[in-house]
Length: 60
Image (cartoon, rainbow, N blue to C red; front, side, top):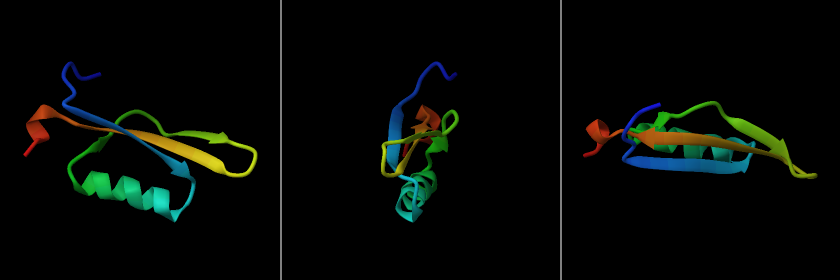
């Protein structure tokens, strides 16, 4: 685990193309995946989450 995380986001949503687009967008902005994705079922849909970080050296 890094000692200094400048920026952290937790992206969540239904397990669909929109969620994948959100993750792809932040990766293109210089974030990196942080840990494993998570999944749960809310009774209707599969809900997923992925943490991402941008390290201080990656800040513009």
